[in-house]
Image 1 (cartoon, rainbow, N blue to C red):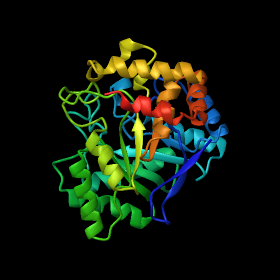
Image 2 (cartoon, rainbow, N blue to C red):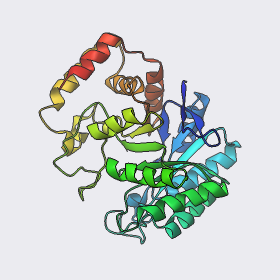
Image 3 (cartoon, rainbow, N blue to C red):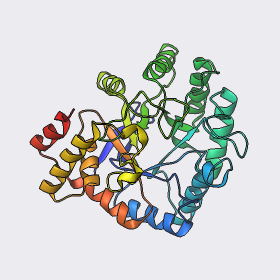
Length: 327
């Protein structure tokens, strides 16, 4: 395994494995035995960065989520896991009532919600401190200053370490960070967006955000990361839910004329390296010119092993240039 540092403040920055494990379906679609086996193997391989959310996986049973955090809490206790493993969680997109969703009834990002939701996550995970806490989705109904101050209070109290943000427009992220900086408060240091080698259309709603809100990383996001070297991008769905090997799973926003030539380039490089297309995608992200941590889930040990092996795949300069050159 290889590692990189996230965060800049010496008091809170953490060294994490370059490949993060997504636990979204652990405890729901992925049963406890399989989830434990995946977590155990990931840690055995040197993995130290696990991702979840307070709303995972509400859609599986029509509830409000929490199954993933609860399973991770049980696993931590059963294995004696301490602060050597960084568990990131999110708040803001938990449905306020069963049978609803983050689209029509989200908990939001008020100071009250931030405090209460963070406390629930700490209880479910069985930790005194959340290593990394994200604002999961935007909440335009709450003044950004209130949100910034709500997160900062938890950091000051020692119940949260690093702060992150997901699925928000870059200008909103920058405004929140500027508010924090002007007040001498901790701000967002980790950005989490959908990101893969294939590029989505931006003129149609995504499958994940049918209401038209932001999900995928944009050229503007990458430019922002280049301008702010202290930030790290955690790239969720890097393998597009298996679409690289099962084309019928390709989200609709990736179905456009630019996709076939990029797939052809991937297959060409995969053939040259003897690696799978999925491994080439992960290796391409790991060697990017901005700090990217691919966040990949797995439902079987075979999938996890394939992902782990990508960490040691080194693309040549020529291979990377050819992948990048495809329009």
